[in-house]
Amino acid sequence: MKLRYNERIYPTARQRQDLARFFGCARVVYNDGLRERRTAWRNGEPYVSDTALQKKVITAAKRTEEREWLRDAPSVVLVQSLQDLHVAYRNFFASRNGVRKGPKIAPPRRKRKSGRQSIRFTRNGFSLRDDGPLFLAKLGDVRVRWSRPLPSEPSSVTVVKDPAGRYFASFVVETEEEVLPELDLDETGTGIDLGLSSYAVLRGRKIGSPRFFRRQEKKLRRVQRRLSRSEKGSVNRRKAGLAVAKIHARIADRRRDFIEQETTRVVRENQAVYVEDLNVKGMARGRWGKSVHDQGLGRFVRVLESKCLRYGRRFVRVGRFFPSTQRCSVCGSVEGPKGPEGLAVRRWTCSCGAVHDRDENAEANLRAEGRRIFAAGLAEK
Image (cartoon, rainbow, N blue to C red):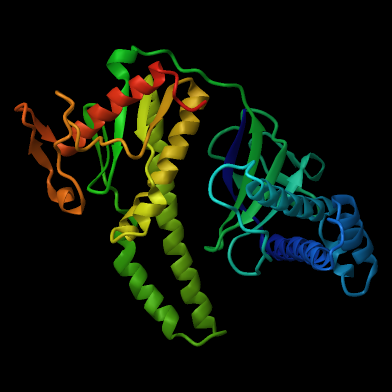
């Protein structure tokens, strides 16, 4: 299976200037290719093939006075930029034709100068030395801060500059499946009830809500106020914008690290995981939208599912309309608190006499329903 390893890199001042040109060249090629295909579509012409597009917006463009500066960038970077456009169109068509699952995908859009910038090198455009620098075509050796050794030779590397001004190298490597020792299914299987007051409730354990955004909200508001008051195009506005980006990057890094650590612990401690299929987008449209985005529940479930597949653990999604909170985990009757007003009720008593903690009861119900779904062969493959 393929995995992605992200490492921080530190280009020199000269290399940062070169990377800025490479980013610009890749962006222009992408936008030129997008314009050609849009023009062909408006004129009722056939879809422009990748080969014809590459000849026009790269090979022929380099010979023109208007685009001769494309020669400054490595050819592999320009070709991979068009490959990104090809993938964007392929996903768009697959979404429109119903081949791709999930929400409909919009057609490709033009890339902007601002925000995240990236370029990709394939095997003939980079090389590695053991725990040493990363050699990139037309750039030279770039210092890398290695956090861990790569498990195999990477097939490609993507150089990324984030809005906070940091540079990363993202390596794609092929690894073998690492199956963990099998645990007792009855003793270690767990349901996971995700929420806002507690991030997640598992069998015998609760994960507290980290509230990364909320903790930085006051500071972020102050910096954003300074940004809005600065003059457009000024040095102070650029500084304030960078300060805002750094706060958002810090929040995202902490949230990502939290999710990676917690999902790894869940997978190592449990043979089977049963999770409710939450409608995160629907939840985010409500009054708790900011808190829902702060939790990153959708990412937690996706990462958890990926790690279960990687390490040989059972992963089952329970339907979002299953009444995990209202159902009594002892007798099965549906008598628990319902509706928005029921969210404030943390403990309730069933007619059978069982007293339930809202979240612990939901976990037990999800675990039982997940086992039933798997036994009936209804789990998604």
